[in-house]
Each structure stands twice: as C-alpha cells, then as structure tokens.
Image (tube, rainbow, N blue to C red; front, side, top):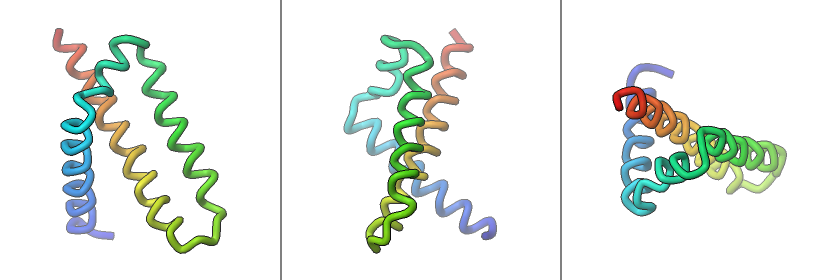
Amino acid sequence: MGYEDIKNKYEELEKLLIKKNTDYGNSFDKTLDEYGLNIALVRIEDKINRFKNLKDKADHKVDEDLKDTILDIAGYGVLFAIYLENKEDK
C-alpha cells in the first residue's frame, strides 16, 4: 500500500460522501442535531455489526460488501469529525 493507493481510496470516499450527502439531504447532521452525538456511534456500530456478519460468509459478493462497509465506517468517521468541528466554530 502506497501513497497512490491511499489517495485513490480517499478520492473514492470523497465522491461517495458527496453523493450520499446530496441524495440524503445532509441527514447525518440533522440526525445528530435531533438525537445527540450518540446516534453517530449507533450508526457506526450498525456498520461494525454488518461487517461482523459478512466477514465469515463464503459468497464472492461478500468481499465487495465488506469493502463497502469499511468505506461506510470511514465515511461516518469523516462526517462525525466535520460535524464536531462545525459545532466548535459556533
């Protein structure tokens, strides 16, 4: 794993976050505003549980699902960090 691998995966995550944020209308921030910070941890925990359920399956499609799930976890981490930074600025 080198710089280009990291850069490419980051760019993939960036596109995914922008698309989902557009599609879902910034639902992550809205949900945290309504239910509090713990809801972000619940969403991440849901993805971790999905990962646990997928990791032992023999289905060839599972590898793609695992990669998608890991990107989702990373994405939630990025969104959570941005949310916290924006709240500090206010």
